[in-house]
Image (tube, rainbow, N blue to C red):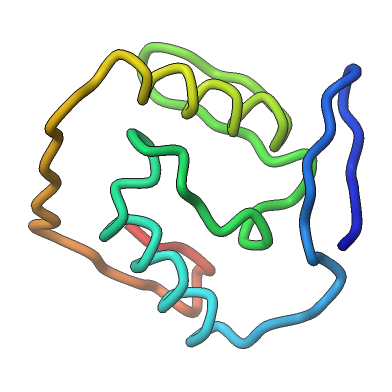
Length: 97
């Protein structure tokens, strides 16, 4: 496994392997089905080490921080349930909503 370091934190990833668009979308969908943003159970290889997370409330950069924030958020939540109502992909724009 490759490791990326960011401000004293380590992130373990297989990394360095290109994957197809279809595989990336399938793996991202699986992350959502696992409610990754609450559980922290995510496919680390889908994200760049310097990825940026932004929503209307907060913005930050870095996979290590992203993972740490997800783990912290999950510690406050119990018995969560996620129902995906929409999952669209725009291959030409390189975007999944």
